[in-house]
Length: 187
Image 1 (tube, one colour):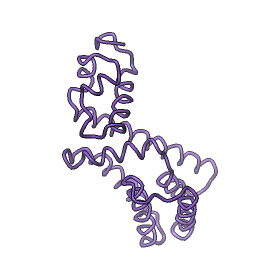
Image 2: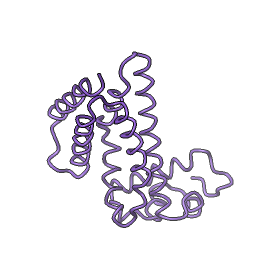
Image 3: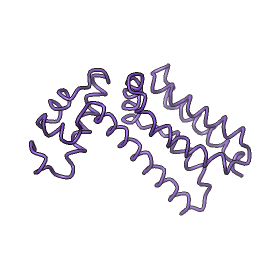
Image 4: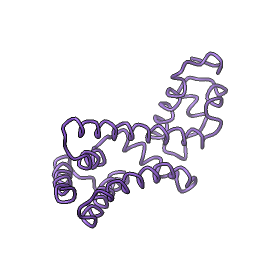
């Protein structure tokens, strides 16, 4: 594959992050090393280090990519709500409750490394705070809005940590009930 940064294609960073994602999900955060990413990606060590000079930089890149994907999902949901002239808040909460196995596995693996690198969680924390502030500002029933957000968080963390995951049918029933509560919150 590509060895020199000068000849790198625009998707080199993405390919390196893909390899990082594979390694972190397969081997765990502690075993995710530059050398493991080099082996998985097929890039030279110099090529990987050019784009990500440390393991911390790799993990930060992975977090940034997950957040960008999540923000794109939110933008899509807001555009769909606008097009359908439906409540934006319901669409936002729908995105928050979506199941994406890939993202769930990566988030779970990254969660383990935040004990050693607590700054990794800051961008996700900031995004979550912005979303919640927006949802709370529009809520007719702020207490119920907070209860729904806490329930969504609990369901997400339970899945990330592997605590007796809900069956798909049970999860969909819970998700449906949480979303139906948005009618009381944002009516």
